[in-house]
Image (tube, rainbow, N blue to C red):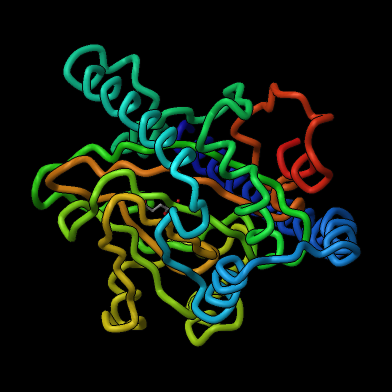
Length: 312
Ligand SMILES: O=C(O)CCC(=O)C(=O)O
């Protein structure tokens, strides 16, 4: 009797999950094609930002390869932003290492991704006093994301990560495995390395041409809540190693990337990989599939319209 009930419950659960998936997909399409994104595209095309050479190059590289790599100082030539971000990172590292050595309960980790300690995680209050958030909300970054996506985007997630070194031979889990981000068909993530990252420290890796209409876009193509974590063995058969870009790079390197394409990273077996990260996605993503990671507590009236739109 119990077995029958359990099987019945499993079947109901399966049907409910399938229905929920269909519902989420339908909501995404509606928001992408008609509701949120159409208005957001109009707002962007009605007053497109003027980009400088560095920003134009980043957008062009995102369009061709799905990523762009540059020193943070190229986008933010004043020393101030970098120095403040580095100071924040030092405080985060000190606190994290104290937590790892003692009260692990005090560390912010998410279930299933315990190898990453987060400065913020979800549900935090933030304002422009936070130097990384300030950089992410600035028009230097936002105009790049908006131009690439072709609409006024939402700044959806902002954080710093400390990837805790794992034992030699540890299996890849979660985002250490090849995947496409489920949230949006076109989005921009940035990763700012706050430590030198070598081969042993779980560098970010990406398959150029796997986003948009690139040559690898049709390999387990993106769809909302799609098959975004394929079997890693089949992945290795279909995507030759030579087409993978591995981002070993010095501290201060900024990677911008469309993570609807295949990527992975974060399995360090030696030293902590510390980075700052941000996600810009379309309003359709925000409405139907994801939550905002923070609440902006600063003065909205002081901000221009695209920035206000991005952070609220
Ligand atoms: O930690 C990394 O390098 C990968 C992160 C990732 O997969 C993601 O943010 O979607």
